Amino acid sequence: MAGKNLIVYYSRTGITELLATALQEKLGCDIDRVQYAERDKVSFAAAGFEAVRKTTVKIKGDTHDASDYNRIFIISPVWASSLATPVRSYLAANADKIKSYALLVTSGGSDVDGAERDAAAAAGKAPDASQQFLSADIKRGNFDLKSFTE
Image (cartoon, rainbow, N blue to C red; front, side, top):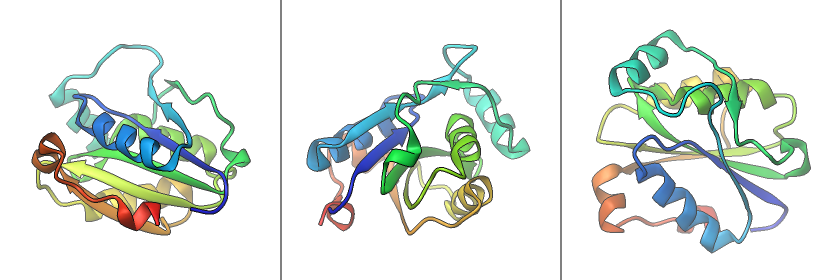
């Protein structure tokens, strides 16, 4: 894939991290794992509550400057049909620096349309491409990243 790429992801359970690291291995690009700055982990219930409220929080782990990259791969779990709060927070904080982005979301099967709308609202623009990956498929290693690597 032409240009300089960055992967930015959040993973509460490790499933989204599997997808992020698989893409990073294929692209050989930089990767940032964003996390809550003021707590280690969020409960399932709190995650859903934050997602519904479209909360933003202080994050850590965003070590690369988004403006240095042609394309950013945003990888997030879906929480209550929305992006994970740290990912929404990253997009909102870097909206003016992001030139182009693709959205990859992981879910247990819930609606992902809301996550795409959430990303567009936070970033101020829609993703160039998006795709849903089911958690069960990721656990089995049964997923295809060709549309993002060719």
